[in-house]
Image (cartoon, rainbow, N blue to C red; front, side, top):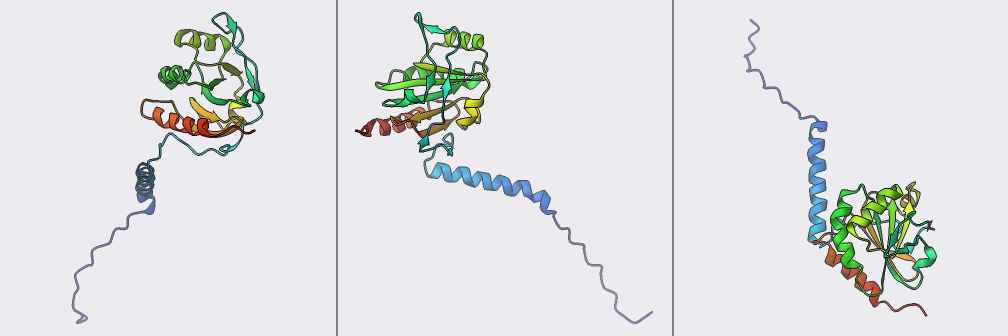
Length: 202
């Protein structure tokens, strides 16, 4: 015996690995970001775009082959078609489920006085695009066929549908990611009203 008093063994402290907590930290951060957006009244479907308040990318799209509306060919479009008009540019595809859901609101939007309705038909065979528009109706004045998706990339499209507002000078002023819905439609109209209230450049 050494004469030293015996001490009880100390319990081992278990450390929680940082990697285990990482998903929790990420979840809390995303929840806080979403809460801030709601608090500030921002629509989560409105995504900042690098093209906002810049000229629309150079665009020269042909029409959808063989598509007519009331017996008349529906033309494609170029940047020149933006000049002097406020335009809603909708990116859609026949294979896009949400595009079907928002279509009635696009039909309603097409009744707005002075608004030019333009579409980019994204990565779609012409026969599928024709069938889609014949089934659900055509709210567009001009439709450009972007079969390769290159124009969509230049416009910064990350998914379909997306809708842009382009002012009378050809500048992108607003972008909505995802479909128009009854919940966000009034906010979209508010942005349209702002553009309509601006005086055209002399």
